[in-house]
Length: 240
Image (cartoon, rainbow, N blue to C red; front, side, top):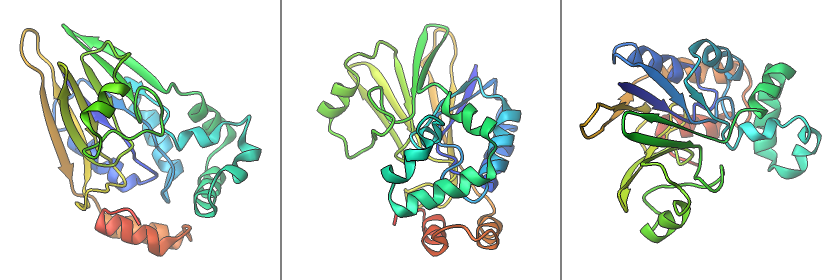
């Protein structure tokens, strides 16, 4: 069985479209999405509608998706920095209340089993959606995050960088970012898990080109907040 896992689309419809085109060539059985769909990026509505059509097997709520909790939405301005609040308003104005409600009600974690292998899906870490598991983490820090995890494999995102580690017999896989990579390679990324009975699982890290020029043109035409900074992040695949 082949599972495509992606995360951190962040309102980048061109990147999402390119990944889905690549997935169509990969003989994929199911799709798992680990959250952060619409913020921050100029095409939140297109990304939301497309993801609804995709109907992923697992669809999680990322840390920026949490901002759309309707019970707290009037207090969100006090919780965010000015730039983040502008991104929030941009997405909120493109999405309906039903869209916002849907995002806010997504699970923060989920799990599944295939053959003899079990998987835990989170956005950040098993402890918090805001956590990051990446190469900067020590083994001890990762072990602490995994102490209550029973599954064989942890799938996560949020760092916007691919990362693979094995600790105490468990595999930790950060799948990178579709729409806003921060590894200085401006391509959309995802992974494919090839899971077969009585065989070791294979993990394939994928990068695909997408139409960056068109994406940035859309952002500029829409008056996307902090456009120059966003343009640099997209072109250089680097956080500013």
